[in-house]
Length: 79
Image (tube, rainbow, N blue to C red; front, side, top):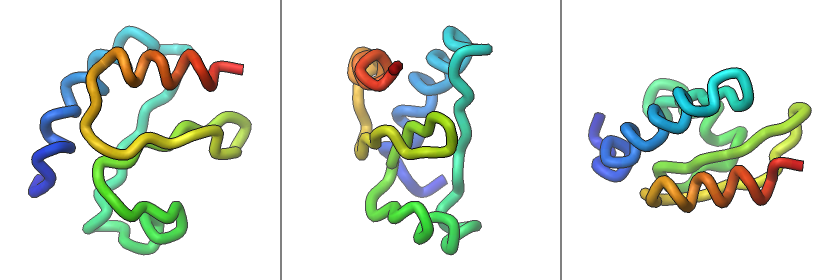
């Protein structure tokens, strides 16, 4: 709730989740509520976006970005 960049990017992520339903699953972590999990994933800044495939991290983005940056990121790591 306190993270303004997180709040700003939320509508973009929700839009992507709707557009990519069935292809990509989106999740959200409240780092204040689950500090241990945030530490386990080495989250040092928010918002942090981590892409997983087959239980492996394939890439990450940090910060508020435009929709096109997320689309490019997902396309780059699609394989």
